[in-house]
View 1: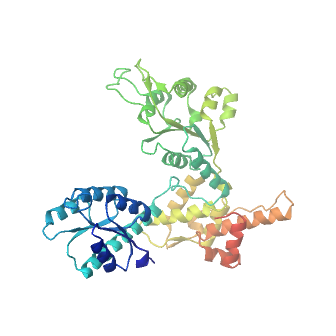
View 2: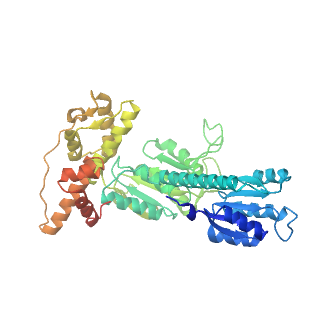
View 3: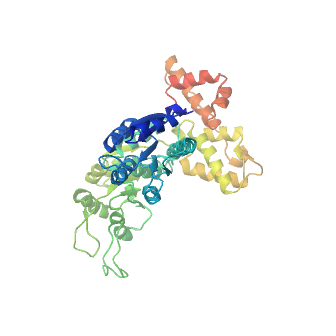
Length: 453
């Protein structure tokens, strides 16, 4: 807790006798003093006081308020949250109100009553501390760029760190992963972590649009370019100007459009259908696919030169079945979300349901898990979702391992058990330690040794 003596207070007064009186009256606080504008600004930078008391009449012209108002503006420019209490003459109410209009916290007429001044300064400090705490809490609640992604798997955490590393560059990113692994979530996270986050994120699925329409969707068209083109229409590339364009399922891009996309990547200009003007576009490209593009290039279905343009940085996203503990972690989160949407409180998964979720292969990855939990949440009779309501039959688990190094096997087994336990109990350290049969300090030590957070 902040003590009164640690609260920095700046007293700006050119009358040394009055300066001492104010400092003596406010001896509860850690006061620093200044006698003119220059020394006050020095103290502002040195002590960063939360509260300032100041006279408007300062040298070199104490009979004028111009120097005082100039100092007030400079203090608030340095730190707008500073609480400035202006001391004025008895008949100087107009200047006091002007000071408040400029951003001063309060004003006091001289001669002042020490008790009332103390009370006002104390109130100013409390307001400053509340505002500071509020800002701190708001900053803690600010979602980071990858807030839409939940994982405890080391491989997936490495993917997240890679996204954060490459976000600030303009390199073209290729996201490779099975359908439903969260490629668009990562692409949006990449955009939010980049300097382009203030501009648009535009996504287009190359497999969902017929080939005869895809070109106009990407590049736009001029009025009269074809039958039905009643007005000029911007394409997705131009719409994303200044931002990020995600080309989902890039492996399904028709070969006829691949040359045009390659030209855009080389020249960074486009021509709308029916147009002759080259239009410069500044956009960052993120592409995603579940297909093996290298195999497609060998088969002649994907241009090799386009592949190398798109694959400046390749990020492989592991499937859900390979993310240790993530299935249970995500299942708990989905239960909370869908229970809230269905106005059903306190829903949870039974232990058998969690185990079944952990052992299922999830060929449809996160999308399949999400649909499964949504269905179970709707169909569940009570507040606990059973394994029958989840609709999964846990397969036999194969513990065979080709490695015979006991230390490696032990570390891997401990890591897998800890991640699995944390996922099963939704991250509760106390319950995880009970499930693992160890004390809480022991679990923390194991997590630290195995590099788990």
